[in-house]
Length: 137
View (tube, rainbow, N blue to C red):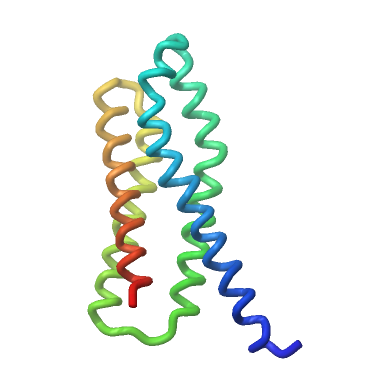
C-alpha cells in the first residue's frame, strides 16, 4: 500500500487521539469542577482522592495532547503569519495550563488550590478554543 493511501487513516488516528486527549484533559476538568461540591460531602479526604485518580488519567492525556499537537503542526502544511501567531499564543497557553495544573496538584491551602485550579481550567479551555481557530477553514 502506498504512503498516500494511508494518509486519510493516519489523519483520522492523529485527530482522534488529539480529541481523546482534549476530552480527558479539558472535559475532565469541567466535570470535576461540577462534581466537587458533591465529592466534598463524601468526606474530608474525598477531594484529594478523586484528584489523585484524575491525575493518573489527565497527565497522560496532557502528554498525548502535546504529542498529537506537534504532529498536527507537522502535518498542517504552510500557513499565514497570523496562523503562526495564534499557534505560538496557544503554545504559551498550553504551557500555562500545564504549569497551573501542576501547581494546583502541589498546593495545600484552599486559596492556592482555587487559584491554580481556576487558572488551569481557564487556560485549558482557552487552548481548546484556540485549537478550533487553528483548525478552521
